[in-house]
Image (cartoon, rainbow, N blue to C red):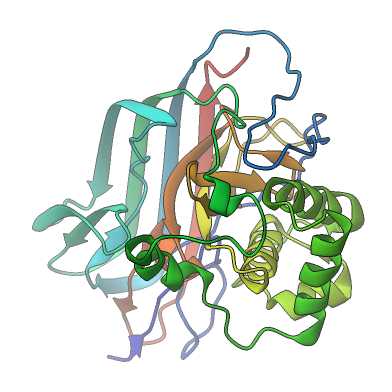
Length: 341
């Protein structure tokens, strides 16, 4: 039996792979929709700013069903599968209920938090199977009506931000930049000059720049592209823009991480998809989301599943299967309801 390695990044396809190629367990279309509320205000140093929004209730209650159906060309043995489909439960979203089902039934499973605080389900199996079905259902209440409701510490109002020694120890993992191209650093420097190195202005300007200057493409398979590639092409999927956003932030010394989840608003065809955006750690404000694909600060229209410095560690599923010459195909569906204001 030949072992086919499968450590999928978010949105990676498993379909139509030949013998000896990587067999991926995850494939989900990526939304390329654009939110009409693209403009974000410049903010006073150290203070939050409020953007006018359509009046609605302070919370939004959402129900979702997300199903992944994997089929294999012949019987395979599934190695333990890691699943990150349970939404986070924090100050921005309240998880009312979550249930899941896995078929065939695993012989064992466990739930735990990983090193970055994500809720993880790990399941393991016996015997051969020609399919694997994972379904996640949840009801969640989004709580962040105003994404600018925070007060920066004075030391964080201007770039480079300053933190105390303990905070910096943890934040360094997310702000450390490695092998950034000169063009990434130049973009970060240009935006800092344009915004007077004001932290909140910089983040608003970066979000708006990527939204206005880059073409959003539908690329449902593959790892996030290198930031230099996305910058050169002036286009990318939501996960490509999220990675670029993080790298530009790190070039400016801001801790940032990749987030996988869902956007409540459907695409132009009325479909919902897995989505990706970025979060930046702001002293006094904590982790704050920015969505360059839609050109806005993240509020009550996003549902986060997992976040990590490395996109692969926020992948909704990962695992491997074994089977000589076996190929796999994935069909995924996502239903969201109760999201209208």
